[in-house]
Image 1: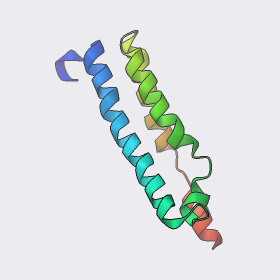
Image 2 (image 1 turned 180 degrees about the horizontal axis):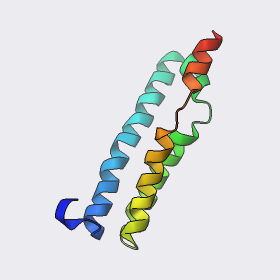
Image 3 (image 1 turned 45 degrees about the vertical axis):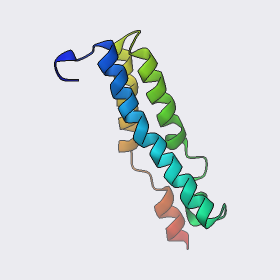
Image 4 (image 1 turned 180 degrees about the vertical axis):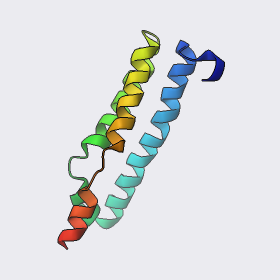
Length: 98
């Protein structure tokens, strides 16, 4: 965002940039599960995948909030980052049981 920090359009564009890998990650998960089956280790480990489902929603909300209050937008982006910094042991736990 550089010199335009907290301007509405660059902040919204940043949300779009963040949303793109979130969508790609979801598509990759679905492709792997489709190839391995719904009873695969990955499908079992992901379960409801709260982090994976809430991240794109927060990115879209942050993109929309950029036009209301860019600080709220940045807070939504930061919340996603914090969610993913928390270690997720789902896959390790499932593999450890096998």
